[in-house]
Image (cartoon, rainbow, N blue to C red; front, side):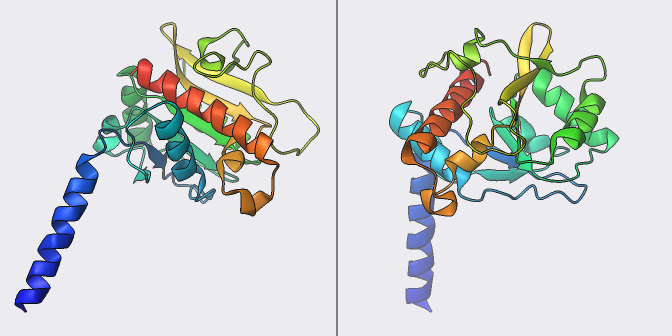
Length: 219
């Protein structure tokens, strides 16, 4: 029994020390409605690793999972939402998400093909006074550490349309960025999952790093 206690204490001490190495966490949004909010399981850990190496950030290696109505939402400067299907926000969830974004939080919605109509509908609950607008290529989100003078990189083809970046701007500030016809999060996945050229993955990771850097510097 004593050995078991010592082993537990040693593991707890290691885990606590490991967690203390990092000062920030980012999160994936777990929404209701039936859509696969859990898609792209390797994408955020890979993006975090890329940011820690190239932006010198100090983000915990694994993302947290957060629901839109959770008060802990305010702990995360960057929240990522993805999937293919239906999304629903309750009145309380929409209010909490709105307060989070107004307070300085940042939401990245990545259409994994099929999310578009549902994300737009539900974000209208969050900001009924705003519509998504296309973000010009001159916007700072395309010009952080990495320069994207022509906007979003095209990662995967679906409907033979160019990638577009839309945003919700509240009181002059971009609080939600929606990547459409891009599949940015797929480009963050392990190379073996989609077998994309490494150059394509790097473009996706660089754009993702820009999103994180923008969110962190505007938090």
